[in-house]
Length: 450
Ligand SMILES: *Cc1c(COP(=O)(O)O)cnc(C)c1O
Image (tube, rainbow, N blue to C red; front, side):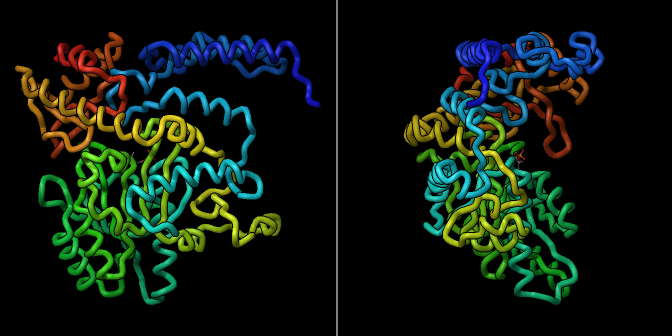
């Protein structure tokens, strides 16, 4: 038996009390400090003798945690916030206490089984076949990269005469697509979308065919559609893009890191018609499916193609290569992995899918409320009607510096966290509403400062 001293037990109570307090009460917004300020407050925490658990925990609670913005604060509306359910957060404590290994069926069968049921829910919502499957990876960036690597590996088995591999996507695609292309040392064909920022099949077909004509030894191996841009929530035309890809033997990948969460909301399901054509897709439960960082669901229509690209071979791993077992490590660029899909699984299993759908619909409804409030505000102008839960707007007469000054002061005054972005080269503000705790009064409090 391992030794559990009274000191460790006291620390356990301290940790659980902190966690309970954090979950029960509205979190403070807090904000960053410089490394110098933090050093002045805590000094060097790594010492030969150790600080002891209680002291280290106190330093975290009193200083370090307060120098981190609470991403689940109801008036944190910058970037894409985080809104893990209490259930998901509580279960993250359980995962942390359980030394689970999520890479192989042999070691983590129970955890992998549960994760796979959560993946199945997403896959079924998208209308993919029962043979579809995948893995929870760290984030959308890793998900997109892993999917594109699988797509290229598949194409390589069909063509040996290609001098340059190319991924096609909207010019509005997320930066992680360009990052993936950089890592893979491939080219990007970025297509300017015609209709309100949403890429359609006809313009993609024209661009891809013209590109191939001009560059006969180059090959577009994947077409990426974005299902909900991070900046504005715009959804590409999935059905026509899927057809254009498949008519040309091209892999169709859907980046739904933020937006595909809304697949579960019956009222908005139609926005994603065509998602069932995907060869691979991603969605981040840590964005809009009420799970803590960090979890991205990566799903392949044909998981065998993912495995062919990603399975690592080594003498010490051969014992894991049982064809009938599902080893999550085999489906992305990673080996060791924590069972990072489990907090999401627990929340989904405990709350049920109906509550999930309702929570997503509620946040979309709040986004529409925000749009109305902005339309009625004397100094503000809506950039576009919200499609999902991002609301973009401008403050008349302000330049970039004024937006930044306002944003800094909003955080300094501990009112909210809203950062400037840009649209067509001009500064904008945006509310990204993924937190069911964000209420009309929260929006009003922020809008009153504009
Ligand atoms: C957030 C986001 C990503 C990147 O996901 P991470 O989890 O931050 O790596 C990719 N694509 C879109 C559309 C996103 O919104």
